[in-house]
Image (cartoon, rainbow, N blue to C red; front, side):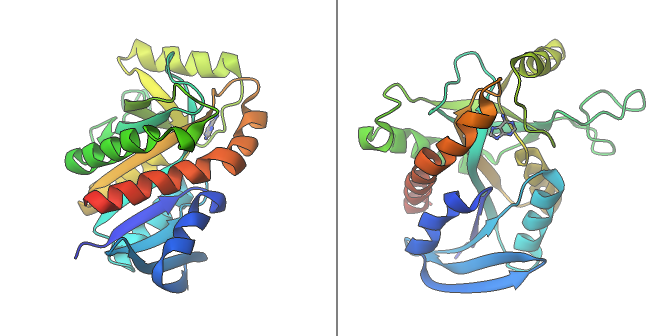
Length: 246
Ligand code: ADE
């Protein structure tokens, strides 16, 4: 059976999954804990990406090289950048880019040098399954009583090594990307790095992010309280539904 890796950014988002794990085995490797076992009859390995692009790419490479991960699902939180992307919504990544990649004038702004591309895509089938699982999870009103209009979006996620916590910064980021044709829905710190690593290894990748803040002047306050109260429940509900359909 296909081994599914489930990457979480934060420990709070992983706790519920570890509790559900059948035949759990913990292995420490490259300074990280990896949890092997089964969830809903599927062989899985759970890991924390750590924070930022390099740490996440290292975790992803270890999952594939050392733990035999054959598909990779990232579950985490993000700041909402799209106009209609609200706190409590969910964004599933159709494409990923690195908003802090800039090797201009040698290469076009945002293009990853020597790959000849700016965007890395989520795997079509896995992304569709993850989007459907997210929609189903959100259709349960008990999941998000504080967010009655919570919506699942599918689109572009931008990653970079910055926690964006300012309305001016987030709007200039959004317009800079828009000026070269990229309409970004959410911003975080790992997805594009994991997408690139999975591209290198030919491993299907999909990512879902619950919107914890609007990357504006209150982002640093909204983010931690959201993680504790909401994000872990979303992560569990979405992953359980996904695994039942794979
Ligand atoms: N993850 C969640 N919120 C974020 C933000 N505002 N910037 C970067 N990563 C995030």
